[in-house]
Each structure stands twice: as C-alpha cells, then as structure tokens.
Length: 85
Image (tube, rainbow, N blue to C red; front, side, top):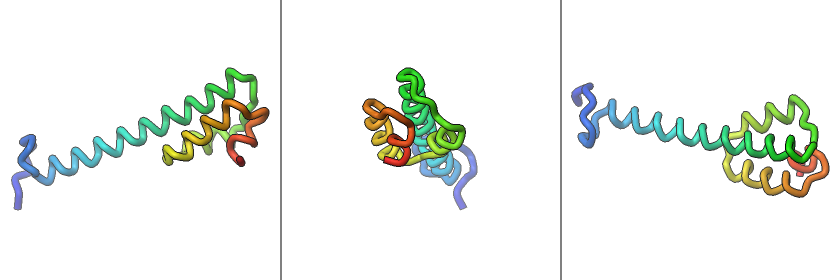
C-alpha cells in the first residue's frame, strides 16, 4: 500500500484524490460562473427570470449548455427563449 502522506509527483492515493477533487472543484466553479453570467446578462437586459429558471441555471454543470444559454441570452426577448430554446 502506498504511503498516505502527500508528496507531490509521487502518485500517492492522497495526491490522486486531491488532484481529482481540485479538477472537480474547478469545473464546478466554471459552471457557476457561466450560470451567473447568463443570469446577469438577462438581468441587465431587463428580462425577468423565474426562481425555477434561476435554480435550473445554477444547477447546470454542462458548460456547452451554459455557453448556448449565454448566446441565446444576447438576443432573447424573454427567459423562456433561453432556457427552453
């Protein structure tokens, strides 16, 4: 069994787990930031967002979907066009 100590570059279980967690945290942070950008753009354009739409945006972890929503938010006239489009 490998030593449980953290020694960078040695491939220990702890290091592998740490790096996996770090990558997951980074991806989650990027998704939250993208969702906030979509919501902020809609807010700045004066387009109301329902609580369920806000929750849906903030729960989304698919960056491709969030990018699509951001593109739609630029030309949408209501939030349904973004989240159901």
